[in-house]
Length: 252
Length: 66
Image (tube, each protein chain N blue to C red):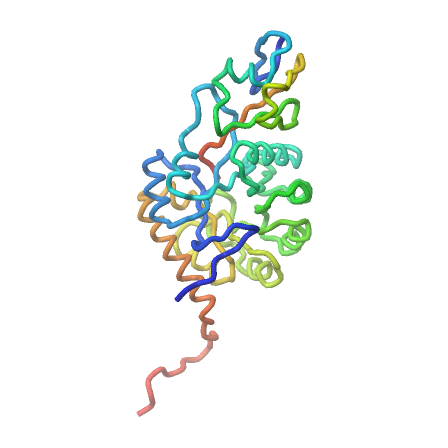
Protein backbone atom coordinates (compact mmCIF):
# COMPACT_ATOMS: atom_id res chain seq x y z
CA UNK A 1 0.00 0.00 0.00
CA UNK A 2 1.89 2.98 -1.27
CA UNK A 3 1.01 6.12 0.62
CA UNK A 4 1.26 9.63 -0.78
CA UNK A 5 4.19 11.51 0.74
CA UNK A 6 3.40 14.40 3.03
CA UNK A 7 4.42 17.66 1.33
CA UNK A 8 5.07 20.76 3.43
CA UNK A 9 6.54 23.66 1.48
CA UNK A 10 9.20 21.96 -0.63
CA UNK A 11 9.82 19.19 1.90
CA UNK A 12 8.52 15.71 1.05
CA UNK A 13 8.16 13.24 3.90
CA UNK A 14 7.44 9.54 3.60
CA UNK A 15 7.40 9.14 7.38
CA UNK A 16 4.61 11.02 9.17
CA UNK A 17 6.43 10.92 12.49
CA UNK A 18 8.47 14.01 13.39
CA UNK A 19 10.73 13.62 16.39
CA UNK A 20 12.10 16.19 18.81
CA UNK A 21 15.61 15.58 20.06
CA UNK A 22 15.15 17.05 23.54
CA UNK A 23 15.32 14.85 26.62
CA UNK A 24 17.50 12.03 25.31
CA UNK A 25 20.06 10.82 27.86
CA UNK A 26 22.88 10.94 25.31
CA UNK A 27 23.51 10.95 21.58
CA UNK A 28 23.87 7.15 21.32
CA UNK A 29 20.41 6.63 22.82
CA UNK A 30 19.04 9.37 20.57
CA UNK A 31 20.55 7.79 17.46
CA UNK A 32 19.01 4.38 18.15
CA UNK A 33 15.62 5.99 18.81
CA UNK A 34 15.75 8.11 15.64
CA UNK A 35 16.66 5.13 13.49
CA UNK A 36 13.90 3.00 15.05
CA UNK A 37 11.35 5.80 14.52
CA UNK A 38 12.03 6.05 10.78
CA UNK A 39 11.71 9.84 11.05
CA UNK A 40 12.87 12.10 8.23
CA UNK A 41 12.43 15.44 10.01
CA UNK A 42 13.63 16.27 13.50
CA UNK A 43 13.60 19.39 15.65
CA UNK A 44 16.58 21.10 17.23
CA UNK A 45 16.70 24.13 19.53
CA UNK A 46 18.87 27.25 19.19
CA UNK A 47 21.01 28.24 22.17
CA UNK A 48 23.96 30.47 22.90
CA UNK A 49 27.14 28.83 21.67
CA UNK A 50 30.00 28.36 24.10
CA UNK A 51 33.64 28.18 23.06
CA UNK A 52 33.77 24.41 23.55
CA UNK A 53 31.88 23.76 20.33
CA UNK A 54 28.60 22.10 19.38
CA UNK A 55 26.76 19.24 21.05
CA UNK A 56 27.17 16.96 18.04
CA UNK A 57 23.45 16.69 17.38
CA UNK A 58 23.72 18.39 13.98
CA UNK A 59 26.47 16.04 12.87
CA UNK A 60 24.35 13.08 14.02
CA UNK A 61 21.27 14.22 12.09
CA UNK A 62 23.30 14.91 8.97
CA UNK A 63 24.92 11.48 9.16
CA UNK A 64 21.47 9.86 9.46
CA UNK A 65 20.15 11.91 6.52
CA UNK A 66 17.44 13.51 8.67
CA UNK A 67 16.27 17.01 7.77
CA UNK A 68 16.52 19.68 10.48
CA UNK A 69 13.54 21.61 11.84
CA UNK A 70 14.93 24.34 14.10
CA UNK A 71 12.52 25.64 16.73
CA UNK A 72 12.16 28.92 18.59
CA UNK A 73 11.59 27.31 21.99
CA UNK A 74 12.37 29.60 24.89
CA UNK A 75 11.15 32.73 23.10
CA UNK A 76 8.50 34.81 24.86
CA UNK A 77 7.83 37.46 22.22
CA UNK A 78 7.34 37.61 18.49
CA UNK A 79 10.50 39.69 18.12
CA UNK A 80 12.60 37.08 19.92
CA UNK A 81 11.10 34.28 17.85
CA UNK A 82 11.73 36.10 14.56
CA UNK A 83 15.38 36.77 15.44
CA UNK A 84 15.89 33.17 16.60
CA UNK A 85 14.40 31.88 13.33
CA UNK A 86 16.64 34.18 11.31
CA UNK A 87 19.69 32.97 13.26
CA UNK A 88 18.65 29.35 12.72
CA UNK A 89 18.31 29.98 8.99
CA UNK A 90 21.81 31.45 8.91
CA UNK A 91 23.38 28.73 11.10
CA UNK A 92 21.66 25.70 9.56
CA UNK A 93 20.90 26.89 6.02
CA UNK A 94 17.22 25.96 6.14
CA UNK A 95 14.02 27.98 5.65
CA UNK A 96 12.05 25.59 7.84
CA UNK A 97 11.15 26.77 11.32
CA UNK A 98 8.99 25.43 14.10
CA UNK A 99 7.54 28.59 15.56
CA UNK A 100 6.84 28.34 19.27
CA UNK A 101 6.34 31.26 21.61
CA UNK A 102 5.69 30.15 25.16
CA UNK A 103 3.56 32.21 27.52
CA UNK A 104 5.11 30.98 30.78
CA UNK A 105 7.34 28.25 32.19
CA UNK A 106 4.73 26.31 34.14
CA UNK A 107 2.37 25.54 31.26
CA UNK A 108 4.63 26.21 28.27
CA UNK A 109 1.37 26.98 26.46
CA UNK A 110 1.69 28.92 23.21
CA UNK A 111 1.06 32.66 23.44
CA UNK A 112 -1.50 33.09 20.66
CA UNK A 113 -1.00 36.84 20.15
CA UNK A 114 2.78 36.66 19.87
CA UNK A 115 2.62 33.47 17.80
CA UNK A 116 0.30 35.00 15.20
CA UNK A 117 2.41 38.16 15.02
CA UNK A 118 5.61 36.14 14.53
CA UNK A 119 3.93 33.85 11.97
CA UNK A 120 2.98 36.82 9.78
CA UNK A 121 6.50 38.26 9.92
CA UNK A 122 8.24 34.94 9.27
CA UNK A 123 5.98 33.97 6.38
CA UNK A 124 6.60 37.39 4.83
CA UNK A 125 10.34 36.80 5.28
CA UNK A 126 10.20 33.59 3.22
CA UNK A 127 10.18 31.01 5.99
CA UNK A 128 8.30 27.72 5.81
CA UNK A 129 6.52 28.10 9.14
CA UNK A 130 5.34 25.17 11.26
CA UNK A 131 3.28 26.93 13.92
CA UNK A 132 2.89 25.38 17.36
CA UNK A 133 -0.52 26.44 18.61
CA UNK A 134 -3.28 25.77 21.08
CA UNK A 135 -6.05 23.37 20.03
CA UNK A 136 -8.08 26.40 18.96
CA UNK A 137 -9.87 25.96 15.61
CA UNK A 138 -10.19 29.73 15.09
CA UNK A 139 -6.53 30.45 15.75
CA UNK A 140 -5.52 27.56 13.50
CA UNK A 141 -7.33 29.21 10.59
CA UNK A 142 -5.78 32.58 11.41
CA UNK A 143 -2.31 31.02 11.38
CA UNK A 144 -3.03 29.45 8.01
CA UNK A 145 -4.20 32.83 6.67
CA UNK A 146 -0.97 34.33 8.02
CA UNK A 147 0.95 32.06 5.66
CA UNK A 148 1.94 29.11 7.83
CA UNK A 149 2.85 25.96 5.89
CA UNK A 150 1.58 23.71 8.68
CA UNK A 151 -0.36 24.23 11.90
CA UNK A 152 0.56 22.18 14.93
CA UNK A 153 -2.08 22.09 17.65
CA UNK A 154 -1.13 20.59 20.98
CA UNK A 155 -2.82 17.50 22.37
CA UNK A 156 -1.84 18.56 25.89
CA UNK A 157 0.92 20.75 27.35
CA UNK A 158 4.52 19.92 26.41
CA UNK A 159 6.02 17.02 28.31
CA UNK A 160 2.83 16.06 30.15
CA UNK A 161 2.06 12.87 28.25
CA UNK A 162 -1.63 13.53 28.88
CA UNK A 163 -2.64 12.57 25.34
CA UNK A 164 -5.23 14.41 23.25
CA UNK A 165 -7.46 16.26 25.74
CA UNK A 166 -9.90 17.67 23.21
CA UNK A 167 -10.17 15.34 20.23
CA UNK A 168 -13.18 17.23 18.88
CA UNK A 169 -11.15 20.42 18.55
CA UNK A 170 -8.45 18.55 16.66
CA UNK A 171 -11.12 17.17 14.31
CA UNK A 172 -12.55 20.67 13.83
CA UNK A 173 -9.10 22.03 12.99
CA UNK A 174 -8.48 19.21 10.50
CA UNK A 175 -11.90 19.60 8.88
CA UNK A 176 -11.28 23.21 7.87
CA UNK A 177 -7.52 23.30 7.34
CA UNK A 178 -6.03 23.86 3.91
CA UNK A 179 -2.53 23.08 5.18
CA UNK A 180 -1.26 19.96 6.94
CA UNK A 181 -2.25 19.66 10.61
CA UNK A 182 0.44 18.10 12.79
CA UNK A 183 -0.44 16.99 16.31
CA UNK A 184 2.30 18.39 18.51
CA UNK A 185 2.89 17.92 22.23
CA UNK A 186 1.11 15.84 24.83
CA UNK A 187 1.58 12.41 23.25
CA UNK A 188 2.23 9.88 26.02
CA UNK A 189 2.03 6.50 24.36
CA UNK A 190 1.38 4.80 21.04
CA UNK A 191 -2.43 4.92 21.20
CA UNK A 192 -2.29 8.73 21.48
CA UNK A 193 -0.33 8.93 18.22
CA UNK A 194 -2.76 6.56 16.52
CA UNK A 195 -5.72 8.66 17.68
CA UNK A 196 -4.11 11.81 16.26
CA UNK A 197 -3.86 10.19 12.85
CA UNK A 198 -7.38 8.71 13.08
CA UNK A 199 -8.65 12.23 13.72
CA UNK A 200 -7.12 13.21 10.38
CA UNK A 201 -3.81 14.76 11.34
CA UNK A 202 -1.18 14.66 8.61
CA UNK A 203 1.63 13.82 11.01
CA UNK A 204 2.60 13.64 14.67
CA UNK A 205 5.45 15.48 16.38
CA UNK A 206 6.68 14.10 19.70
CA UNK A 207 9.84 13.90 21.74
CA UNK A 208 9.33 13.29 25.48
CA UNK A 209 7.21 10.18 24.91
CA UNK A 210 10.20 8.58 23.18
CA UNK A 211 13.29 10.22 24.65
CA UNK A 212 12.18 9.84 28.29
CA UNK A 213 10.60 6.38 27.91
CA UNK A 214 12.29 3.59 29.84
CA UNK A 215 13.35 2.13 26.46
CA UNK A 216 13.45 4.97 23.90
CA UNK A 217 14.36 2.73 20.97
CA UNK A 218 11.42 0.40 21.62
CA UNK A 219 8.99 3.29 22.11
CA UNK A 220 10.25 4.89 18.88
CA UNK A 221 9.42 1.69 17.02
CA UNK A 222 5.99 1.67 18.69
CA UNK A 223 5.32 5.26 17.60
CA UNK A 224 6.37 4.48 14.05
CA UNK A 225 3.82 1.66 13.87
CA UNK A 226 1.19 3.73 15.70
CA UNK A 227 1.36 6.58 13.19
CA UNK A 228 1.19 4.21 10.22
CA UNK A 229 -1.76 2.35 11.79
CA UNK A 230 -3.72 5.52 12.50
CA UNK A 231 -3.07 6.92 9.03
CA UNK A 232 -4.19 3.67 7.37
CA UNK A 233 -7.30 3.48 9.56
CA UNK A 234 -8.25 7.07 8.74
CA UNK A 235 -7.91 6.36 5.03
CA UNK A 236 -9.75 3.03 5.30
CA UNK A 237 -12.94 4.60 6.64
CA UNK A 238 -14.04 3.15 9.97
CA UNK A 239 -17.43 1.49 10.53
CA UNK A 240 -20.11 3.65 12.15
CA UNK A 241 -20.58 3.17 15.88
CA UNK A 242 -23.86 1.40 16.76
CA UNK A 243 -25.85 1.15 19.96
CA UNK A 244 -27.07 -2.44 19.43
CA UNK A 245 -25.14 -5.48 18.36
CA UNK A 246 -25.00 -6.44 14.70
CA UNK A 247 -24.27 -10.10 14.04
CA UNK A 248 -21.12 -10.76 12.09
CA UNK A 249 -21.98 -14.45 11.61
CA UNK A 250 -24.89 -15.54 9.40
CA UNK A 251 -28.10 -16.43 11.29
CA UNK A 252 -28.89 -20.16 11.71
CA UNK B 1 35.95 48.47 24.49
CA UNK B 2 33.35 46.33 26.19
CA UNK B 3 30.67 44.38 24.36
CA UNK B 4 27.96 42.17 25.79
CA UNK B 5 28.85 38.77 24.35
CA UNK B 6 26.18 36.10 25.00
CA UNK B 7 25.04 38.00 28.07
CA UNK B 8 28.45 38.79 29.58
CA UNK B 9 30.36 42.05 29.30
CA UNK B 10 33.70 41.23 27.68
CA UNK B 11 36.65 43.43 26.65
CA UNK B 12 37.79 43.55 23.02
CA UNK B 13 40.12 45.92 21.13
CA UNK B 14 38.41 48.96 19.61
CA UNK B 15 37.35 48.40 16.00
CA UNK B 16 37.12 44.62 16.53
CA UNK B 17 35.07 42.93 13.80
CA UNK B 18 32.60 40.11 14.28
CA UNK B 19 35.26 37.78 12.89
CA UNK B 20 37.80 39.06 15.48
CA UNK B 21 35.35 38.42 18.33
CA UNK B 22 34.65 34.90 17.09
CA UNK B 23 38.35 34.13 16.59
CA UNK B 24 38.96 35.07 20.23
CA UNK B 25 36.06 32.97 21.55
CA UNK B 26 35.90 29.58 19.85
CA UNK B 27 36.49 30.42 16.20
CA UNK B 28 34.46 31.05 13.05
CA UNK B 29 33.09 27.52 13.17
CA UNK B 30 30.27 26.02 11.09
CA UNK B 31 26.80 25.77 12.54
CA UNK B 32 26.79 29.11 14.33
CA UNK B 33 25.03 32.36 13.60
CA UNK B 34 25.61 35.86 14.93
CA UNK B 35 23.35 38.80 15.74
CA UNK B 36 24.64 42.27 16.62
CA UNK B 37 22.10 44.41 18.47
CA UNK B 38 19.30 42.11 17.35
CA UNK B 39 20.19 42.00 13.66
CA UNK B 40 21.65 38.93 11.97
CA UNK B 41 25.09 39.43 10.46
CA UNK B 42 25.58 37.04 7.55
CA UNK B 43 28.64 34.81 7.64
CA UNK B 44 29.99 36.49 4.50
CA UNK B 45 29.93 39.84 6.31
CA UNK B 46 31.67 38.81 9.56
CA UNK B 47 35.11 40.04 8.54
CA UNK B 48 33.86 43.41 7.31
CA UNK B 49 31.46 44.20 10.16
CA UNK B 50 32.90 46.29 12.98
CA UNK B 51 31.25 45.75 16.35
CA UNK B 52 30.14 49.06 17.89
CA UNK B 53 31.22 49.89 21.42
CA UNK B 54 28.66 48.58 23.94
CA UNK B 55 26.98 46.35 21.36
CA UNK B 56 25.04 43.24 22.30
CA UNK B 57 26.46 40.31 20.34
CA UNK B 58 24.75 36.91 20.42
CA UNK B 59 26.29 33.73 19.02
CA UNK B 60 23.85 30.87 18.64
CA UNK B 61 24.11 27.24 17.63
CA UNK B 62 21.76 24.26 17.42
CA UNK B 63 21.40 21.89 20.36
CA UNK B 64 19.08 19.01 21.26
CA UNK B 65 15.59 20.26 21.89
CA UNK B 66 11.95 20.36 20.90
